[in-house]
Each structure stands twice: as C-alpha cells, then as structure tokens.
Image: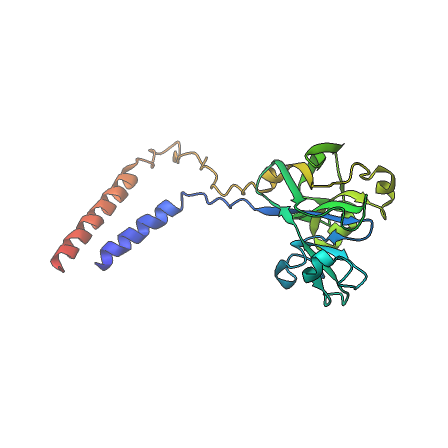
Length: 273
C-alpha cells in the first residue's frame, strides 16, 4: 500500500506542476457621504468617530442631525436622540435607507440614500457630497498619488432626475494619502476648486443618488502569469564527427521502467492483502 500511495503522490505532483493558479478578483465597496449646510451628515466609511466600524455601524447607517443638544428640538424623533455620541456631543441618529454597492470589476455603479426627512434641518444645500470607497489609493504614485482605478461619467440624481453630470470627478488626494482609500468629491465648500465647480443643483426631498463608472480594475486584478516558459532548447545532436547520441532509447527505457515499477507495485500490493 505504501508503494501505491507513493506513485499516486508522484502523479499528483506531476499534474500540479502543469497548473496555473489565478488569484481571485478583489471586491471593493462604495458608500455615499454628505454634509448639509446645518451639518447633518454621513461621514466616510473609514471615519474614526462616526464610520462603519464604530458602535456596530449605528451612526454610519443613519443620518446624524444636530439639535442643539436638546432632545426636544425634533419631538417626533425624541427616541432617536443620543446624548452620548463618540465625540461627547448630543444629537439625533435619524433612520435612513442607504444603497451601498460592491465593486468587483469595471462597470457602472450607483450609491444612494432614501427614506430620510430632508426638510428636517431646513437645509437647501450641501457642504460636502462624496463617494467614499475602500479602493486602494497609491500615495507613492507621482507627486500627489493616485487611485488604482479611474472614475468617469458621474451623475448626481435627485428625486429620480439627473441634476448634474461630471465627466471626471475630483479625487481627494489629501485624504487618500492619509487613509490609503479612494474618495470622489462632488461638493466641498473648503476645497478651492469645488467652491466654484462643486454641486449646486437641486436639493433632495425624497432621494439622492450618485452614479459613476469605474475602469482600470480589471487590469489591476489580472493575476500574474505563472505558467512556466516553453522549453526551446534544441535536441542534443552530438559531435558531428561521431554518431548521434540522442537515440531516444533512454526515453523509451524510462517510460518502460515506470510502467514496470507500477506493475511491481500492484503485485506487491496484492501480495500484502
């Protein structure tokens, strides 16, 4: 039985040597984020105070609405008031429905928020509007770093209607260098470029969505070619003044030897039963 196992293992090793192992494609995540003029917000997923991994996502999966530390500011949401938030303040954690998305290949994706009372804080504009992702940002690429993916053809959709189109969104390189993640910016009143070019379109009453196209991930996820190169060595021809020494007999003998060994192993196995 030992001989049989030995031959089986040798055969498996020989077959394994001819296989190419491909790496599985990475799967990333994207989330809508915003801050209204009175500072109601959903921060980036990796925010240390109100991010996805804080308090099991309690703050990240709702909308933080300030109420002057007063649980009676919005009496209809009194049961949603939290007087012990991570930053030591008090405010409301208002329920909302988020559409987050997983990204595993090049294509068009959409994130959004609905089922939220947009009139609650009397806002009509955004301080911040963005998409945060865990797609890697390479801080060592060039002077400002760059994402491993490209983003284009973005649309901001308010209450089901496209209200703005952005061919090439601004990537938050400052945040990328710190976090190692990619964030797309559409509004930021503290960013010089977005002060004038940021989103100033319609304000939602029902829903807010951001659509974007990702490219470059398929190439980034392409597994390395681990196939051994073909053997291009010419057959041995021997010295031209002597008979060719590569007769092929050795190869035949080797095959015959393996066959004989296998036969012997079977016989031995039978005798030991």
